[in-house]
Amino acid sequence: MDVFRLIEENFPTVEKERGFSFAKHTCIGSGGRAAIAISPIDIEEAANCLNFLERNQISYCFLGAGANVLPRDGEYEGVVVRFDRMKKLALSDRLYAGAGVTGGKLLSFAENNSVTGFEPFAGIPTTVGGGVAMNAGVDEKHFSDMVISVIAYCDGVVKSYAKDECLFSLKNSIFLKGIAILGVYFKAEKAAREKIKERTAFYLERRKHLPKGRSMGCTFVNPEGISAGALIDSCGLKGKRVGCARVSEEHANFIINEGTSSEDVARLIDEVKEEVYLRSGIRLREEIRRIP
Image (tube, rainbow, N blue to C red):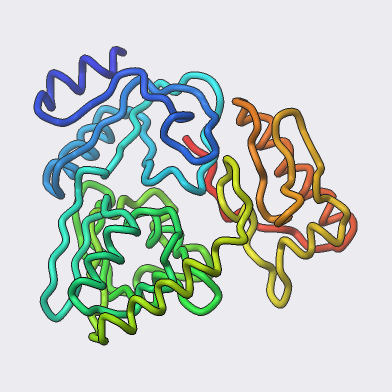
């Protein structure tokens, strides 16, 4: 099946890219190619595309900012669905953001309109869709703390999910089960712009110590009562290497990629999990997503 031709014939106006490179569009900088990537312009077009793919049994995956994902090596014959053109921002008694709005644009929009609450997300590389789906955040606050409702596509229809329907938990939500976030309504609490700027600067400063280099951010979710990085470090795994991938000497919950092989990164993740379990009895849960 020529997936590109099929998409072109049925959706001639949707933005598309043949031979999509995962390595070029992810922070880890590795992975193979997909037959095609598509970028719908709005909720209606996104729903129509996803419904078409499902009806024709064409495999697909989502990709946002590509920050905490590990794409596989080799060829992917399916479709990468990106929401990077869905960038609507609006403010009433709630703040609405399309799935493709970046974290930086969300924070700027909120600050410019004196809306507070998003400052802890400063510097986190994400989109609204990815951030909400993975319930990204810091110890003090996660995206779920700001969500009112989520507009998403599931099983052929677009529906609104109230916050309690999203099943948010630590770095998790119902949307990681293949439900496509299209837009999100957030709380819109007001505060002085200067105060918002101060808090944003505080959180940006706090992120400066994080390791540089190609990574997925934190690889594992912190087990209850302990830092995953500290646990990995206590097992003597800082600097551990598999091929082009190594555990960061600065922060053991970061895996740095110095080559082009996702397989090396995946093997290192698995070996770290196994070693930590053997030494501590704790099974680390991956914070990153493996795609497609």
